[in-house]
Amino acid sequence: MAAGPRTRRVLLGTLVPVLAWAATACGSSAGSVGADVAAHPDPRPSGAPFAHPGVLVDKAQLTSARDHVAREEEPWLSAYKEMSGSKYADLDYRAKPYDVVECPPDTRPGQGCVEEREDAIAAYTQALLWNITGEKAHADKAVQIMDAWAGTVKEHTEGNAGLQTAWAATSWAKAGELMQYTYDGWPDGEELKFQRMLREAYLPVVETGSADFNGNWDLVMADATMSMAVYLNDQAAFDKAVGHFRTRVPAYFYLESDGALPVKPAGSDIDTPAELRTYWFGQSTFKNGLAQETCRNFKHASYSLAATSHIAETAWHQGVDLYGEVKDRLAAALEFHSKYQLGAAAPAWLCGGKVQRDMGPDTEVGLSHLQGRLKMDLPQTQALTRKQRPEGTDDLFVAWETLTHAQSA
Image 1 (cartoon, rainbow, N blue to C red):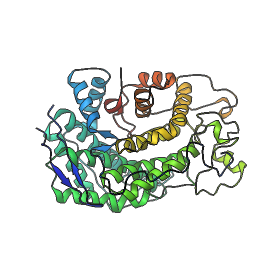
Image 2 (tube, rainbow, N blue to C red; image 1 turned 90 degrees about the vertical axis):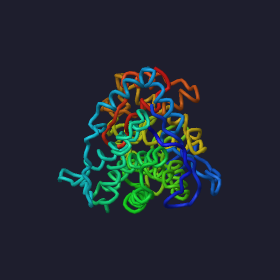
Image 3 (cartoon, helix red, strand yellow; image 1 turned 45 degrees about the horizontal axis):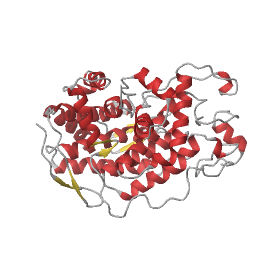
Image 4 (cartoon, rainbow, N blue to C red; image 1 turned 30 degrees about the vertical axis):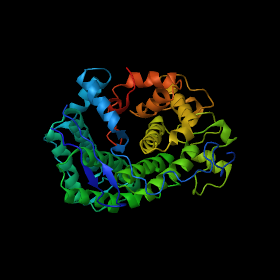
């Protein structure tokens, strides 16, 4: 059976009381800021406790997923079956930790890159299974995987270190959040070691972002920073993630209110309109919903749709409405990419009439808020999401979001 409620003391970071809950058995021109990002007050009251669990998934969403599965309702049942049948759900799963994770940006072989990402997703998968089924073996497996890495990993190296660290950290934080706040069987000393791992080997790498790289790097780094900030009860890191979101999202997804050119990424070395167009992979015509990497491929734009939605969803659980600041921009981007992913012919002005349709399982969270909570009309996104359900995992940083965030069949 799942553990009963208890009050937990934060092991690292700001010391604030948090109440655990029971998991039951069952531009204008370049250089400007977008119109949806103006001056904002401090995002959270100083000293206010964070809501837990609250990294991407909150208590109500876990309860809802569990109830839908118990009633054998779709699409949640199919999503659960896909998750529980995956390699990540195997109770014989064995972690493969590395002390140094080396991820080159080229064809040279790396060390520990795939293993780290998969182990982090496995920990999150086992944590979700614990919350859905109440089977203690899944809780123990999640903790075992996290403990293995917490006692081993020291750093990330090579050119893709920032991206790799962010991908893994998002899943580690989601897993840690669920286990710390729904399970009593994780010894405090081991939790402390896991938190220290995130503070020392992950958070410093991602919290400053990467302004001159393609925007999916910056956005998943902000996603990782936000996720770790909530799990670690770190207000300063949370504020950094919020600030990063407010500058990078308008510089990644275009709205005509930005002006003739997209917003320049804050802190980048881009100086001229020509450099900005090159950064947008040669695109010279800009329409609502276009992304900085659309003409690279839809896969990377899709990563950014997921990361943007993750950040806003986690902030939403903490009482900060980042969705409200970018809802029109996010809706336009979701609709734009969903339309062409579904097969609409690309016009000549768009990437020379050729687009690479390879979106991942990245639409469920944004759709659940914009259409589910706000009742916005997103027909293309809804059609694509239904076609892709159950949205499983990309084996990088997205996992099982039909199960946790689907609003309807």
